[in-house]
Image (cartoon, rainbow, N blue to C red; front, side, top):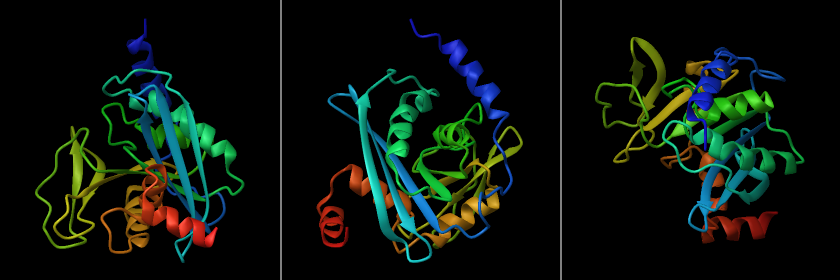
Length: 225
């Protein structure tokens, strides 16, 4: 029997550890920015995490790791980070390079208890993290204009928990939120610095492509790594 009440309480307690301002380990200009993506295989029985490390500002891939582990928890709304972080930790431990900043496919503080996967992972490994989500989990926002770069604050009970960003025309907006050791403004800034004409910033685009074993990414990896 899973004690969901205890897990929610843990989220509330650990959310107090989240640092909401810029606290980079080296400087305000990272050398390496990573992207992370978590998915599930074999009908959810296996959790797969991919981390892609890109050099900044070239945004060239310099390392990637994939970890597959037995899934530790069933899907429970609002508690997804407990299901995802063990595989992320496994992939993190395989890295030879330590990124200065990480973008995670998922929520940061844009979560009912202000502790999505980007915050959870960031606190566990003590790295600046940004949540880059494709959909809204909580909060409300005004309509985002269709022009690339348009944005609206994501609000929840009078608190700004993120920014809704139109990263590309004719694409649904992204939901950007700070994860750990970074401000909301900086989170949006770094996402925009890592855009190269696609909906997703390059770090999470690479992580998603590698995790999904897409032909384009596989061909580039075989050619350059």
